[in-house]
Length: 447
Image (cartoon, rainbow, N blue to C red; front, side, top):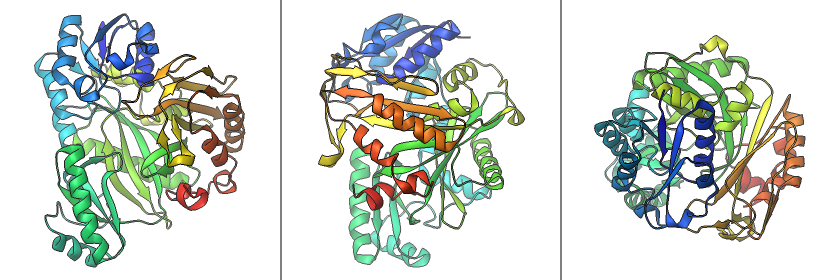
């Protein structure tokens, strides 16, 4: 087991990793930017190191500064959390060359799965269904039109190196496809320094269902059930739940086995997520693998009782998984609401600033992962998520009731948040009935 880990991240995930390390008896080193010098997670780390100004490019995305901090602090391993450098194969490779263990998959695996066209090719070869689309990247708008005519409109242009909804455009005809092609390439080039795109059939009103996997470095692999992440706005998740209210036992088994098949074919190790789209007829299609811990991992922890961060650390240290597939039991229902410092009434405009008052909800079945406190100044440099509210109950009806109560108890004053939006969601008849899809926020709430 490691004796000292550096956390190459910030906010609630940094605090979450520190907690897991403390329980494993591992010392922690927290890096921070000047924009985070009053961050809560710094109070709990064994050592803290400033790595630069508030801008991410000069701090949390600066590989030499992070590696220098790791060498100065004499750590055994680096946990990248999610976002920033978590799926950066070059960073994982640099860690490897510096004899520092990267807590995640190997660099070559990150590289393979980070390129959506290569990942699709791999998945097709092993017989897992992908959405109909182009064979690899497309170079011209004429190529895109040929593919669109073959699979039928609507189609979606996607960045091969994409993520977070960037470099994605939907087209319903040849004219809009031409614009979508060029806009997607331009956005992808800015966001990922890679303008490569491909075309897929756009599935209308699908469910977004993902399977959590754990794989050790000795060939052992399990999935921990699914999370339904269909409640999204512009491809950004707002609510996640486990298990999905629409999966049958047979479909859950089939999708879970497909997820394991994908992970095995890629040579995947550590924690990861295999993502699918589920159409209205019950067919599922592979979309991508997220080669890291997910924001929504607490819902899986709640229904399985398995600490995913600890498992990540154990796997990276060389331990064998202490679990087989038959050991995995899903108990009850867990739901997570992402709390963002945004104003939904103003097109989700970010709302950084001082938190005048913060009061967290509590009680049996309520968990909140957050890094804010009364008097905390939310910096303007980073993602607007300030917390995750998770509830766990014996069934979905009780979980929704518990979430409503927890949202009523949650107080965040001084900045705008998405709490009012979540109250609308959890009181909406379609959500209560489990009848929602990726278009819900736009079609049902008009946002």
